[in-house]
Image (tube, rainbow, N blue to C red; front, top):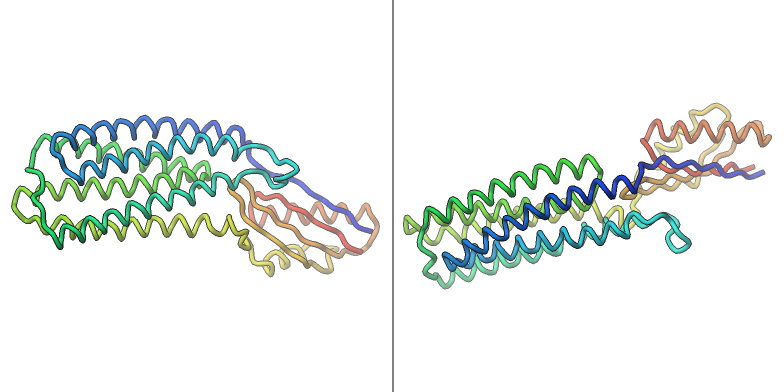
Amino acid sequence: MKCRMQTTSVSNISEYSTETKKVLFVVFLLNMLVLIIDIVAGIATRSLGIIGGAVHSAADALNNIVGFFVLRFAVEPPDDKHPYGHGKFETLSAFGIVVFLGIACLEIVKNSISRLINPVNLPIYRTGIVWLLSLTLVINLIVWIYERYMGKKLKSDLLVADSSHTGADILITISVIISQFFIAKGFLWIDPIIAIAIAFFVIKAGYEILTSTVPILVDEVWVDPKKISESVRSISGVTECYDIQSRRGPYVSFIECKIKVVPKDLYTAHLIADKVEDKIKSDFGKCKVTVHVEP
């Protein structure tokens, strides 16, 4: 006798997509405002640092646009070629943001080393520009807090990763503002030192994204099989639990296992399998559970 019991506890993916798109749209508008301010400030001062910040802001806006297209595919229902759904498209995009962070980090370090070796005359300090940069700092802080909060609430890898990118913007803006004050005092060498320190924060943000996305992309074990086995074998009638597999996805996690039960009639096996599914969901949270009952 062999039966397969399967249930799905997944939140409404379509509703999730709509909510995530709303967040991306708000963030996109704010990023465009920051981009416009950075462009104005960059033209006024001819500062490579400010212009670099504008390029980084443009990358943020581009990421938001890419996010809209990604979500178009990520929320598609399972099909013959993608039986587990298309959720990893979102995780893959989050992984891709690490590339942008890496490029930003390399640019920061490269320009900093260049200025340490070959000092240049930096733009003159201007109070008006500092106020404009302070405005972009406030906007970026709002974007970072809002997007990170919504990302965790919606359990969106894309929003959390993008908020980390905004975190890099905040650090870059702070470094530019601080450098303006040091420029006014004549301490030009401080600017590249601060920039190199910021690069380490960018690397940290990228590492955090990698540790959250790579396990999903490579189907790393979600729950220790021993814990699942202990949970399942606590159900009366289950004599053995084996061939246990688990993995985490962007929207739903999966647990599969085989069990042996007593007595062995079909009706009792179904009842026990139902209890196993309920127990697994109770112990490990909402997930898609597949239970095979073996003779």
